[in-house]
Image 1 (spheres, rainbow, N blue to C red):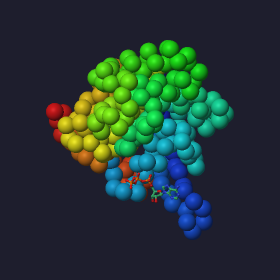
Image 2 (cartoon, protein in one colour):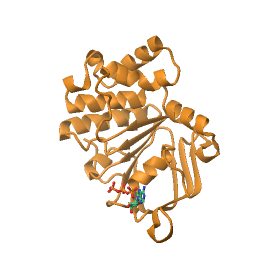
Image 3 (spheres, rainbow, N blue to C red):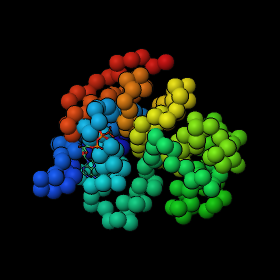
Image 4 (cartoon, rainbow, N blue to C red):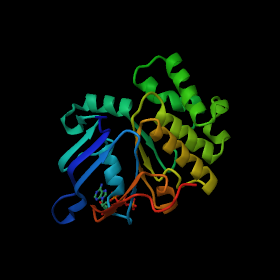
Length: 233
Ligand SMILES: Nc1ncnc2c1ncn2[C@@H]1O[C@H](COP(=O)(O)OP(=O)(O)OP(=O)(O)O)[C@@H](O)[C@H]1O
C-alpha cells in the first residue's frame, strides 16, 4: 500500500491558557495520500491556519499526533524536524513571501541551498521547477520585475523544488485575479497528480472544486467532508 503522506490522529490544539484558552482544533483525524489534493474551508477562526501550521511542523498539537511520510513530528529532535520540513514540505502563502533582493532562480533554489545542496545543483533544480510552472525564461528577473501571478508561480516553484511530497497552501490565489488564480490551482493539481499530497486553505468554492475532497471546519472540528461541489474548469 502507498504510504500516507500526511496523517493527523486525534489532533487538538489549545492556544493560550486559563481563561484565555482557545480550542483552535479539536480531535481532528485526517489522512492525505499521494496524488490527493484536499481543500480546507470554514469561517474565520475555525482553525484552518492552525491545521496548516500543525501539518507543516510550525506548531505542535496539545494532544494527538501529526505524521509526515510516516514520521511522528513530535518525536523528532529540532534538527531532524527542520531537515524533514526542508526535504518533504513545500509552503505556498497568499502573499508569495519571495525575497526581493534575489532573482526568481535564486528564490526557487534557496530551500536546496539552505539544505546543503551545491549551488550549481540547486540552481539546476530551481530552473527545472521554474520551467514546470512555465516561467523558466524569467529565471534572472527580480520579483518586482514580474507580475503577481508570475511571483506566485515562483513561490510554487520554490515549494516544489527538490522532491517535496507534501504541499501546504494558505489561500494561494488570494492576491491574484481569477485567471492567474486558476493557473496556480492547475499547477497544484498537476503536482498532486504526479504523486504529491496537497492541503490547501481556500474561501472560494470554485477553487475547492480542484480538490479531491473538501474538509469543512467549524470551531476547530470537522463538520463535514465532501467531494467537490463544482466541476473543474
Ligand atoms: N497564537 C494564538 N494565540 C491565541 N489564540 C490563537 C492563536 N492562533 C489562533 N488562535 C485562535 O484559534 C482559533 C483558530 O484560529 P485560526 O487562525 O487557525 O483560524 P482560521 O480558520 O485560519 O481563521 P482565518 O480564516 O481568519 O485565518 C481562533 O479563535 C483564533 O483566535
